[in-house]
Image 1 (cartoon, rainbow, N blue to C red):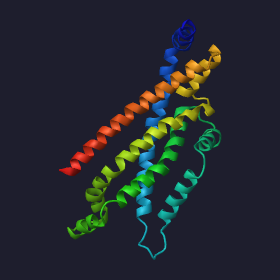
Image 2 (cartoon, one colour):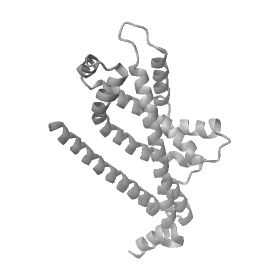
Image 3 (cartoon, rainbow, N blue to C red):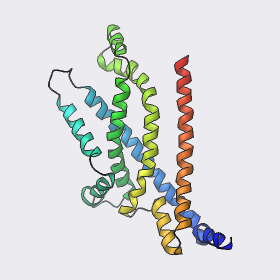
Length: 230
């Protein structure tokens, strides 16, 4: 028992190491939030670019090709490789690691969010677009006022899951020397020569954050279902 208490003390209490965990968690959440916002913006643009494609039987427009190429390249390469390219090549002169990592994960997330949003918009009955056009609205106005609000209910749960995945994916930022929660646990492990307590502690923190977000997402989903029944 004393041994466990000692290991816990060395991993979290000694030299105020708990502060390091909080700082690491702050970096993780900061990157996740910025990347999530970037991913939603990029995802919306890509989804609309793909949906701007002409009806079947006609040639694809340039926006469709750009969006399709973007999604294929991002989804076809590892996120850690994209992070390294951004850090060592694209922004090699930058010293703002959080910004570079946020951009990298945001660009990566945008490819997945775009497919979520596109699927959500396509899930809306086609009659909604026809009804809006029959009322004299343009295609853009119908999309903004009628289709997108309905699609929002379809995409909110999967986008929430994408954000949860994003938080866990940021654990690789240690590759570019950012002291996130995972790297902080690893550093403390090397200082205390004890891997179990720091790594398990970081895992527990991740679990608590993810579980809280999952419960919050469940609340939103239940409210959306209740509103659909009215």
